[in-house]
Image 1: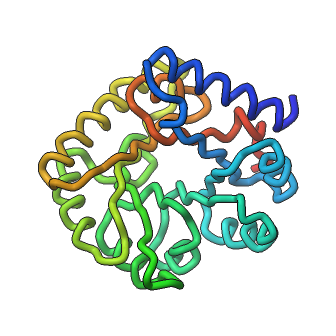
Image 2 (image 1 turned 120 degrees about the vertical axis):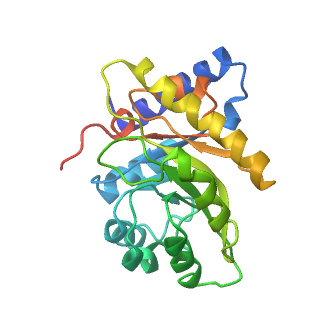
Length: 227
C-alpha cells in the first residue's frame, strides 16, 4: 500500500476508535512519525493530507525542515529525547516538544527561541520504557511545578511510551496511569494540561480509549524504516 493508502486507513481506524470511545475524532491529532524517512516520503505524506510530522533527532529535523521549507503546511513535532546542547536546533521550530523531563532543558528551550515573543509548547515526559528518559510519577508534580515557572515555555500536558509488547492491551495500565496523573497535576497546579501524547502504531486505539489527544504513528503510515 502507498503512504496515501496507509494514511487513509489510519484515519479510518482513529475515527472508529473515537466512535467506540464516544469521542470527537477532531480531539485526536495524528502525528506521523517521519524519522529515518526521506523528504520525498514526507512530501508524499503531505500530499495525502498529513500535516503533523514527528522527528526524534535534532539534526535530522533541521535537515528536513530545510528540504521542505516550501511546505508551510508541515507542522513539526519533536518527540525524541532532547539534550540541552541540541535545544537550539529545536526551540521555536516545532509546534510541540513532547519529551521534556527537566527544568534545565525547558530554560534552554526558552532561551534559544528565535522569536522571544512566541511561547514554546512542551509536554512533560513520564518514564515508561526502561531505555527512555522521563520522570517517574512520584516526582512528576515536583518537575511540573518547576516547568510552569519557566517563562517562554508552556506546559501543555504529558507524554509516555510504555514498554513494547505483543498485546496492545498491555499498554492500557500505563495509559490509564498517565490520564490519572494528568488529573492530579491539573488539580495540584491549577494549570490546564489538555494534551496526552501516548499511543503508537501498535497500540494507538487503546490509547484513544484511555484519552490520548496525540498519537504518534510511524510504521503504519510510512512503512518500515531504513535504519
